[in-house]
Length: 68
Image (cartoon, rainbow, N blue to C red; front, top):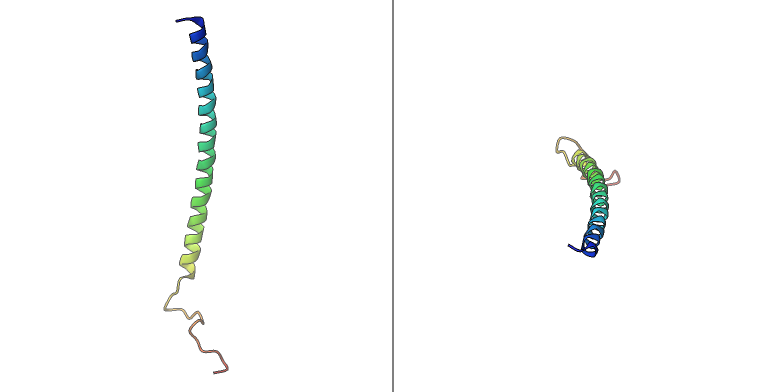
C-alpha cells in the first residue's frame, strides 16, 4: 500500500471513532430520557389508577345538587 492510502485509511478511522463516540453519547442521553419518561408514565398510571371510579366510594359526581 502506498503511504497516501494508509493516511487516508487512518483519517477515515479517526472520523469513524469520533462518530461512534458522538453516537454513543446520544444513545446514553436518550437512555436517560427514556428512564425519566418511564418513571413519569408509572407515576401517571398510578395517579390515574388512584382516581379511577370505585363503586364503593361516593365521588359526588352523580349526586343531585342541594337545590333540587
